[in-house]
Length: 399
Image 1 (cartoon, one colour):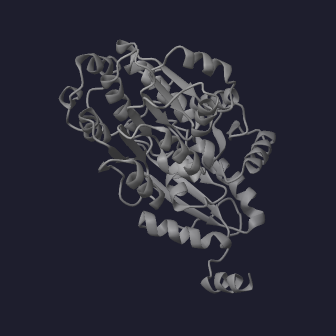
Image 2: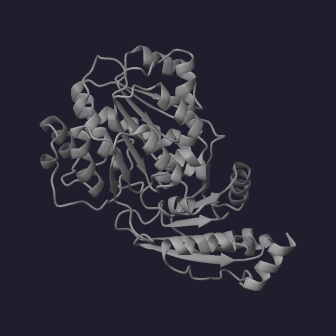
Image 3: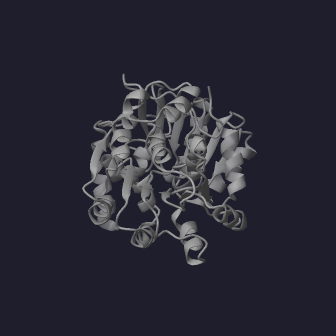
């Protein structure tokens, strides 16, 4: 059975049942209603700790079931009518909206109300939701501070804080806003932080704003199972022909990543003119347009989606068979996040990276992290650049 608004894809589960985690029968009944019997590893580990009131750092990939891992305990421990006591910070609008769907689902029996505060849409409906006395706020950091500064919402009664996709919030430069928000919260609270990676900045947040957190690491070591990595080393002027050839060679659902919004638009128009069933998603599009484009990609109306990293973190779409890095990511963490859009659960997928000699150092950093050398490939008659260490070093000296 599917849940409207929540992407569904197979996720590895444990041998436990939800009855054994300390959840009430009302919550377990909701879980069973939608056909879920066994919790995922992150759910089985986090839920008992969260119900006990412990601070938690959960390291897990997107698609591992972590949203339900923190939503169920919140729905269990909160009761309606005592003001805003739960706060969930999300890096993107799409992730915030998906989280609200979970909150509405599991909080229904307690009459819990959730307000979703995201940018890119009008503030008036959000103000109306805040005046309706919500129990939980799920928000992107910037829009939350807008409401706080306008005195539309107060954070002085927060008892439960969740930082979702924390590493991505830091990638997007949210650290000053996050620290501003954290300083406004009561010191006595439960804090749960979820991330796919554990950079130093997250260690700093844990040290400064958490109380002896339990650390749960469910992330796979090295390259995720089911993912085949490929590298296409070409001249800069051959990147576009390489992409077009790859799209003709691989006909499954495909996500193409660029670094900049302007490049996403440029590629979208090129592919659209050539008759490809393509859509796009980046932060300059309105929220309505982003939701509509994502839905068209999810339902197969468009086979190809062009995305930037900022918007790409909110893409939780089952069945993506191919991720293409038209631009190599700026960090290894971004490569891991991009790769995680394919091969969800027990599925298989391919990650193709189109690179030039200037990207070779990042390629080696990625190879070190995933624990394997990425096979060098060619496609559609596009000339392959020779990978010469001497050339890289001489060009660096010239720079």
